[in-house]
Length: 331
Image (tube, rainbow, N blue to C red; front, side, top):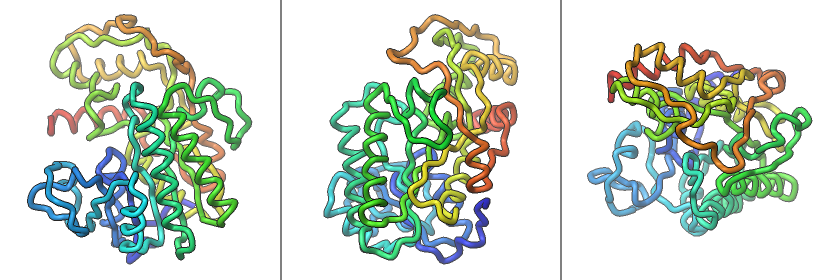
């Protein structure tokens, strides 16, 4: 079933990684729906003049300052098991969304750091939740866990071939979640978004980087751009995460959040050029493919629709236009 926001009124919800690209929007959506939101943020991100509700010292952070005031900020390091336990005790959540991660847009992330945060942090969170009356725990993974076998796996199966440290660490986090579901009965569900884009995305990601170059009249260097990705608008992903949290009987499942449509990277950049009337040149092939580059990644959108009734609503053309307009307005 598609998430009905009215059902979130009064629910206690803990969101780790609340200052991230997706996390910020999820916080706002749930606050607007009347949920009691506890926004987990890294201690060093608590901004000057906005004291953490757990007494973490001020240290600056525009993204935290931008969270709705109705959201209660909990400053803790997900690598610290005792801090996670204290945060969970304070939030006493009915629903949890785990978006805390490193390496999302950094293929060169240190493997030890990725495993410590993305797998170890998941372990700390689930251990803190064990034995509590929590209705659903949504672990947010990544399509990159599938790697080169993405197009050959059985529908609905969990088959992995990660090609970088970030993807490998997310596979490990999935395995931890699977174990806590099987061994301890925690209501864990894994959601794997595909190529998320939209306003507010980190500037070095493909879509915002291309839009900035287009608006500035600059040339844009890319790989040959033949790799195909399932581009899904960030607002659709937020709705999908809410649907994952509400799906009856979803424990133990892995669900893919994408449109089911694959678009070549070069074609996406060309669409941005057409929308903006850019004068710079697109320079495909100026950059090499990354080592282990996966050439085709697309979500099994039909299966997700069948299981939870969610479909992406914003097509690529509309999503790119919205993103361009937002960047024109906000820089």
